[in-house]
Image: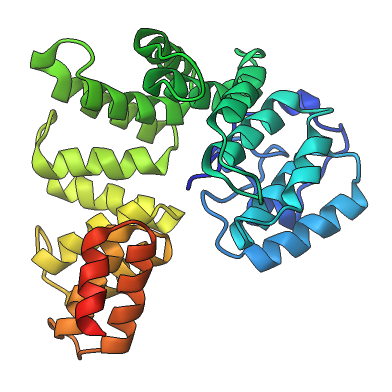
Length: 331
């Protein structure tokens, strides 16, 4: 799950003496640093170090609510059911209510941090956050609310209203809203059907330009296929690489296919295996299934049945039914 991959915050809400810390470096949101100039991460890849760094930073600045949110992010990256994230977020609602409420909404929507999965509660938190829009802290909560409106989860269904809210967020600079609007446009056939492919590609491009790496991988896929945009496999591979290096597992999977098939590059099964492994580590079921198939059959690499079984079981746990059948065959 993407736990607010990028958050656009107001720096004026932070203490004037705020300084960059290792917590910002290891768990900070990349598009809106807690401190101007700090570089964050799209995905927390070193959660043990991030938790320790955020604990140390909060000890030095106990009243900084943004640090509390970053520590919660780090804790959930280490253990998605860590209930220790809840008091941190509750504390943060006193100073950064829209931002913290958006995170709480995501926890209830998915059932993380030891909380029950509860769409009505998630929607209520998203509504609380969205009350403050166009305060940028509210953007993630508004995006969550818009999707629930479209799908009729946790309350009344309102496809036009939800789509309009995503459009407002997208034009307001929230990249993840552009990405979600692209998915919903494609899924629900929003707008002129003769130009829907171009609109979807344009929304993914806007999301990518705004810093959402999932949008980069999706726009790259449209470029690879020439779907709604002129085919450009080289640019697609560049976007896949950018997405993968930043921590978006889908980009790793798509780039792995580029190297496995030799599409525009010299085929390299070793590099493909490395990329599929990165995608699988990021919980992309397709990457795990593909890696498992390669390893089980020894397709260009030495067979490794134990590792193949492990990644197939992981994909099965992630909800891929084919992986479950393949894993049964290997046992």
